Amino acid sequence: MPDDPSENDLKTIWRNQPTEPSTMTLKLIRNKVQELHAKTRWELIRSTSSPLPVIAISVYAWIAEFRDPIVLTAFIVAIVWSLVGQYFIHRGMWSAKLPGDAALSTGLQFYRQEVERRRYLFNRVMPWAFGPTVLALGAFTLPLMTISIPKMMPFLVLLGIWFVAMFFVRMGQQQELQREIDALNDIESENRQ
Image 1 (tube, rainbow, N blue to C red):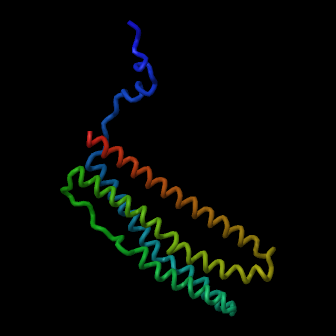
Image 2 (cartoon, rainbow, N blue to C red):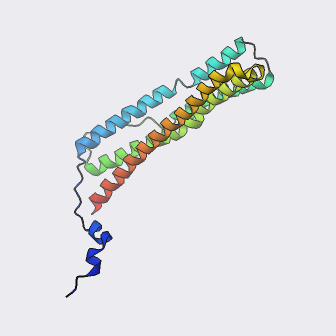
Image 3 (tube, rainbow, N blue to C red):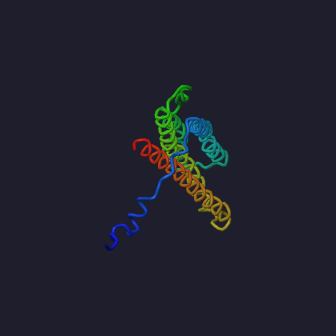
């Protein structure tokens, strides 16, 4: 009797491979949640300093006598934007810790909530903390570029490198959080089976 061709199909062989059970324990979940919670708190604390560069650039521009009304308006908008942004960054971000007697499913849910909070925080930081800084730097740089572009090139190159680096750092953090979510989805699907 000939062999069943579906038995030799690579998809069938791959699907029939035994899977390893999840090595995620409640203790490991607690450690991951505590680590992620600490990172989120540190990011929130760091974000409180985001108005400082905006204010420093604006004050320096005022001292350097940038008196163009459009430039001054841009600095005022950047300062107000960064201060209002603090409210939007921090709104609803301080959460409770994982209860000590939490079951595995509760721990996974809490872990998922912490990952989602962190992801939501990163989505808030770019427009509310990074945006005002970019506006203040732009308002500072544009009047200087009209004076002498060759003298501004080192500053502009460093500024461009900083923008690109910030973008790639944030993208890497978003990818790390997505890997965490994917791992949680895998663990939850294993627990349902």
